[in-house]
Image 1 (cartoon, rainbow, N blue to C red):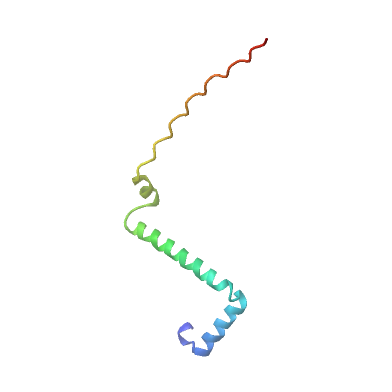
Image 2: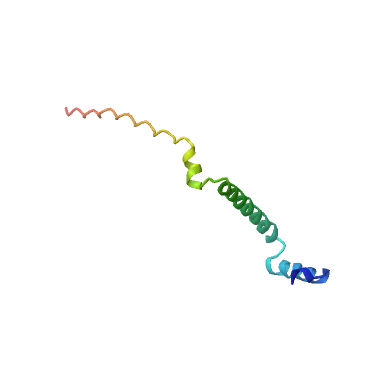
Length: 81
């Protein structure tokens, strides 16, 4: 079906897309689609290498826990005169 389409048919489809989504929203939609495709591609490359996302995360060194805060000095009791 898509292989038999001629120039006019593609032009009509593009015009319909512009009417439906508007010229202002199309660049944002294309940018979001491209970003999603890059993320998907990176994830599939990681899985093709035999790595699972959990294994990739465990390869990095864990950050050491924060040092405990020093205890606060005891408050002085007010002197009653």
